Amino acid sequence: NNKLKLIKRRAFGFRNFDNFQLRSFLTWQFVS
Image (cartoon, rainbow, N blue to C red; front, side):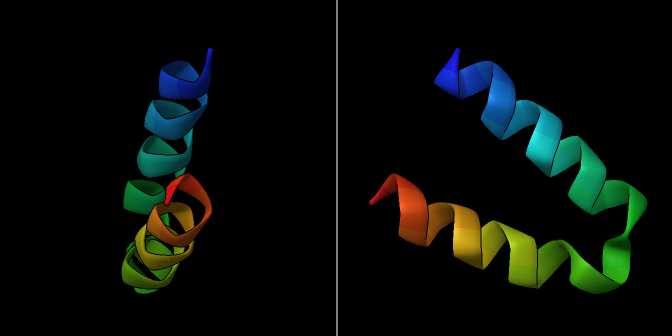
């Protein structure tokens, strides 16, 4: 389930490329 959410968040980040780096960074922070 977590992986699916992560993939969906990444996909959403790709749609909003401006916030992609920020979202990926926040996602890595939460995952860590």
